[in-house]
Length: 303
Image (tube, rainbow, N blue to C red; front, side, top):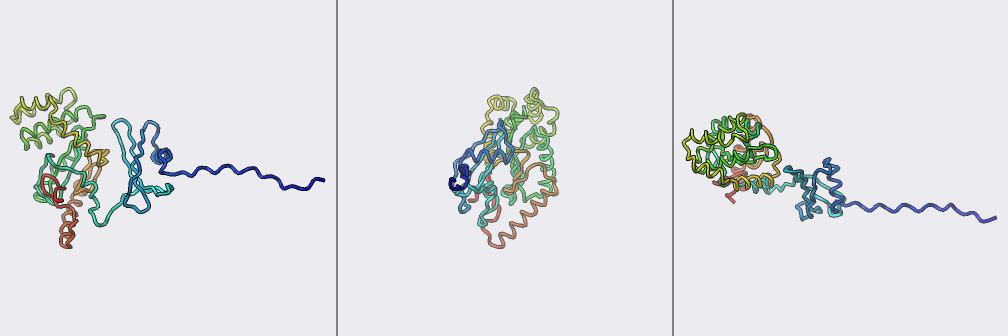
C-alpha cells in the first residue's frame, strides 16, 4: 500500500497589489467614487507637494465639466494609505489668511468708508436673481447701519454658461465707472432693478438709455463697450474667483470669512458686529495678527 500523503493545498492567490493614493489612477478612481464624478467630469490630479501636516503631502484634485470646476485639497500619508480632506490652520495666522492673500480690491468699485475695519468683498453677476436680492440688502443696510465701519467692494463674475448678457453688463459697468466713478453705483442699482426687463438683444440699448439719463458721454461709452476695453478687469475678477474656489453666486467675504449664497441681514450684521468687537479685543491683547487692518486700495496692503 502506498504511504499516506497529506492533500496538496492549492496555491494561494497572488496578493493584490497594495493601493496607494500617491498613484494617480488609484487616486482618481477613489475621488470619482467619493464625489460621484462620472465620465462626463474630467479629473486632474496634481503632483504631490510638501504640506504643513507632518507625515503627509498635499495633493490638489480638480474636477471640471464645461465652464464648471471644483478644486479639492487632500493630504495623503507618505505611505499612500491615508487621505485627509481637511482645512489646515496655523494658530499663529489669521484663519482666513489663504483667502485674504488671494483677494485683491485695487480698482474694484467700492462704497463705504475708506480704511474701514471691516471689508466686504462681493462676487456677483448682474443677471443673477439671488445676486440682485443680496445687492439690494447690502445697499439698503450697510452704510445706514455702519456709516464708518464697513467698506464694500464689488467684483464681477459673469456666469457666461448660463447668463447671456451678464458679461456685456459688466463691461458697460466698468466703462461707466471710467467716465464717472460715482455713476457706477447708480448703474449697479439700476441694472439689478431692471434685471427682468433686460435680455441679450436689448441690453446695449437699455444701457445707453440709462447713460443718457445720467448725462454720460454717449460716444465714449459706446466706444468703450464696443471695443470691450474693460474686459481685462472682468477676466481678472473671474480668475480671482476661480483661485478662491468660488463656484456659486453670490459669494461674500467678510474680512476674508466666506459666506456663500444669500445671507439674511441680521445674520450678516451679527458677523460684522463680531468682527468689530474681535478686533478691539485682539488689539487690546496685543495680537499683531488680528484681522484685518485695511489700507486702500487693498485690504491686504498693510503687509
